[in-house]
Length: 350
Image (cartoon, rainbow, N blue to C red; front, side, top):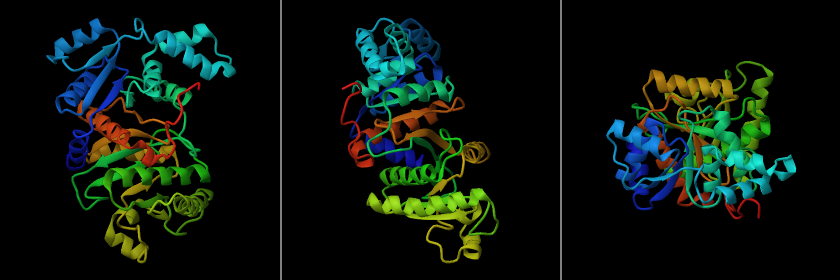
């Protein structure tokens, strides 16, 4: 709670509105209740009000201060459908299909986010990633000058010697199955940006592999090496102060004693606070192992590179995890343009 506690404290000074499309899910209700009780802002639940109230009663949770919207009866549904049609008409979308889509909470929530009726959007507790990401990518899209949308997990472990006082950023663990060199570099840079924003320290980014500085040979190693060099160039162009190094093994990235043997002169080795994985397989597996084996607090997936703050939480997330993600998403919204200059300059369809 060290890290997320500091995020919550900052957010209490700048409360935000967060929309939760899965309003009937018990863990979402519990997180929304905590979000409001901690004075972090105004939670918005989407769904059937009668069902939401029934679940709240079962959990003995008061709904005061929590807004409930039913997309089926909302006065904004028609205008949202017209806006979505304008966005997707060139893809062959028809008016009836646009309205049918907006009636789905994930689409309605994404449009609320796009139309400034919410500052952040969180879903995934009871939906697969595809049904969460598709509306966001179709409606919100990527921020200006960003080519790659990806995601990261923020892990808070008990051992404060790991990462930054026990906090690790791990990417990409949820979006791109097999990133190219360019995409891998983008993932490294956007994750470093988020780490800088949330921690206020210089990111130390390790691009991971099964090899450390040529200890093995394989095409995938060459990709990581090239991505490391490209990430350094991109960070310099963006005036992002961060250290990038790779390829390196995970133990060399995190354990000082091993780093001294494998990379004695490295600026990142043994001190990494950002871990970038070569593909989605390794990132997703590693993040779930860390969360399960070490009982770490896991906050994510925080979506990177989108024009507005959003997250796709795991179906295995607890109410506490979801609260932490909501706090991270909301605190990003306080100065999102520092992360992505020019973000949110235009409404969809304009």
